[in-house]
Image 1: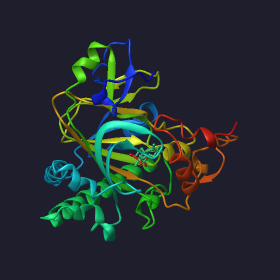
Image 2 (image 1 turned 90 degrees about the horizontal axis):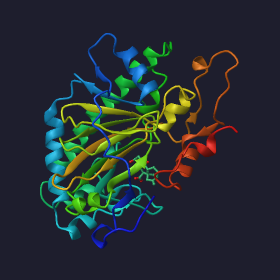
Image 3 (image 1 turned 90 degrees about the vertical axis):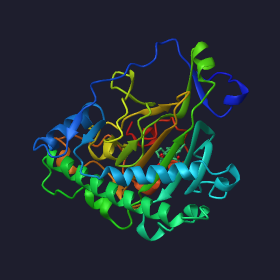
Length: 333
Ligand code: GA4
């Protein structure tokens, strides 16, 4: 339920809750990428949670640390400077407003293209000084995340016993892959105490599922991320800045005909610490048909979804509100 907010929190979506704060969840699957059983464990995690933590991933922490420092430098610029990099149409700087349909959150962000040739993005030129450091940090980080995303979906294909190992990764590897990258900055929200006294929760990013195939997230050590378990319970994900977190997106849910679930997640704000997260969203090319893989369908099993392309899905998704069930219009009745 959305309720009236104190004026300072006009841009923070709020919900009233009678439930105690979500518990810190210790059951999040942890996958060691070097474990020979990784592929089987990843499939299990995608089925049960649509979410898991990846350790031993081989990405040097330095790449993330450099980007985090550059991102902070950007978000600490005067508002007028940052505004020059906005609005996100679709790429650029956004402040409090998320998407085009009225969603708000206690957040600032940069939405970026992942194509190497556009890494000299207009958005990042806002930096008068040293913008090349930011650009190269973004480039290095995105290329590391792409590699991880390709490996993870190849492990998924193996784990699902699909002969064609690249059946998923080819969509992400395609030069026309419609992937994107997001740098989120959640400033501390000093009014939080007043909110919790009134049983209100303030959101940095309201509940949603990601539309793409998979998302690879890294955050600093500030908590806030919550995921929704299959039984509808919200649980807090303990932050871990050295690990990566993987989300199953709506497209992968369709490709597996519902065997994997795209995970509902949201981010709560903190009253003292800022949270910074960086997410690579691996998506297919616009003309790609998003359909269940034939080899995953049991004899006589039909697709739960009508046939659609990523472009059709994306058009519909960008007309939706964050919390909407974006696959609804594509489900067979
Ligand atoms: C959620 C996942 C990604 O952050 C994103 C978001 C996008 C946006 O911020 O512009 C959307 C949201 C996300 C899903 C529904 C639409 C589109 C905001 C919104 C209300 C970049 C994406 O691809 O979809």
